[in-house]
Image 1 (spheres, rainbow, N blue to C red):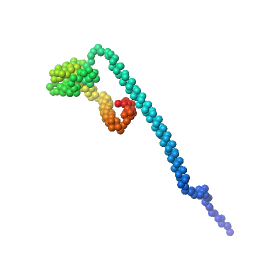
Image 2: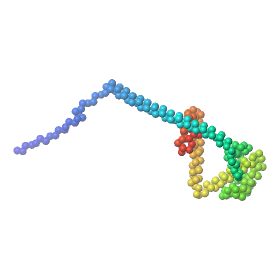
Image 3: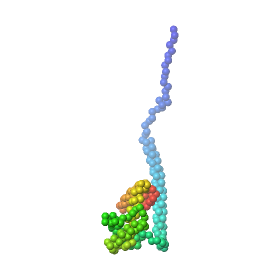
Image 4: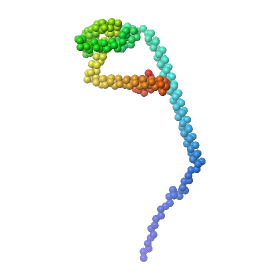
Length: 239
């Protein structure tokens, strides 16, 4: 008779099964872990406070440098204003928004009303003289139009300075010429960039007003407002 072999397999005991079960932490061990964690957080907090103090010192140093530069520029302005200016060979017609007119006291009437009068007179149906934006202001036709506007406005604004009236006439001609140039197809990109720039300037003015209101209310520190526009295309660092 053939003998039968007993083929039985036993699973080996793993090391994990041989290890004793983990005992629960005692109150002393738990308190030690909490104290260690608290000490670690305290050291991290002290490191952050040291970094913040260093950044505050750097910020105050930058503010002092900006104030020193501002005082330096303010001191140079009177020297530049006292320098004698060379008179041009040909006297140019000033624009209505030129600061030379405002500072010399030539604005005897409100220039806004005077510019509006120039615009209405030029665009009136009874006016046969119209500016030609395709030519310069020194062309015979545009000179004739300016002479006509000057003669008509002198009778209405008798107290106004003739140079101021002439400046308003030139300003309106430049407005018409600028509109004509921007209306050309090849100036489409320039026209879009001008619109974008105007929107950005309006946004900056609104933000500037809001920041000044916050400074007035005490919400924002006055020294920090000079850094609010430093990341805006690096164009204006303070206002």
